[in-house]
Length: 443
Image (tube, rainbow, N blue to C red; front, top):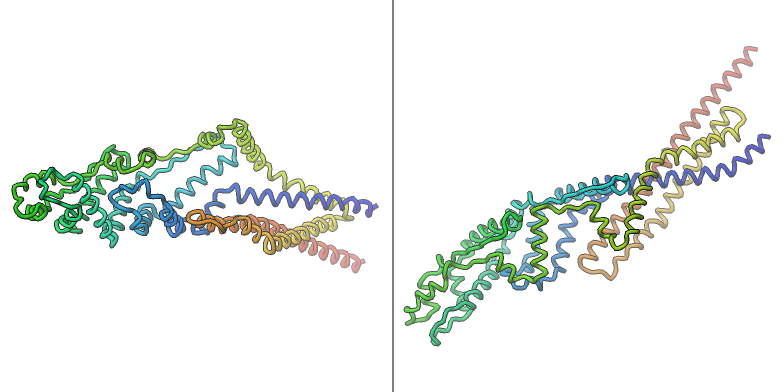
């Protein structure tokens, strides 16, 4: 009779193996993909926040199409490194980390816990004063300023050349002569001071606190009558007053000049950014739905998936209860007494856990990790794509490795628990055997 009962345990053992593997797999998914800390730790372990400044932002600047900004007073292609340094000072890696973790801590629960809505506001306005200081520290105070000095003087010289007053034919003032005169009059130190004041003017505009800026460089205070007479040439002293009017109140640059120097698309992008800085960039569930608005069925399917994920997460304990109830049933079917009924399931759990632990470890080490690497093809990509794919491959391998490690941990814990249980059954058996021997000796 006992052998018939034990024969019935064989299919139950197979069912148990399937169920326990399913329970471990689902729990590992829940412990990783459904946990905000999993993503947060991935980013920290991959040093992603420093990588933004070390690789991603420099590549983005190198790849950026500056055609829409070709008419700006300063060529930003001249100082990419300084731009990166300024951005990193204004928005340090710790700040980036805080923003990312704020997003995951809001978004992941919405995705997996059935939360009806979420709202995230990305705020940078409180960093704008730091932006201004970072520009002064890394761009105006650095060696790159000499290149800015050259660009700006050339731009101002072009402005005055295009606005020359009507002069006699014998007075021929070239753009190069104007630029030379400006270099003689406007020292780098003086211009640096003026640009520092200009930064203070522009930051409130970028923050959206006001809709204008007026950068004024009082050139007329530095360009002397002697310099103007040198431009006019000998014998043209009568035109000195006109030359002074030509200088006017100096060189000014306002938001309207900026709009004229940018393309229509760039102006719109600028206004959008100013709005986001002033009000914060708000992202909520409606934005996700809007991305799916072309097909209402997609929106419904998305919400249904979220609902069932939430339901499934709440029932994970059932997924564990069923196989262990089955294991207890196997013990009662296959055991003769209480000791064998306890030992049998523990032996099964130990060897199943050991087998799956080794199987997961070997599969990942011999095949899985290589497959994840191969799944992300970094060849044939350049610029930002190549840089981001390189880090994405690292993060993907770490994510998959984290999932595998979580599974291995659960199998290891089950091995330890079943091993301890078997040791307990062994002690129970020894105590019982000694009790029987003592009783027999007494008789």
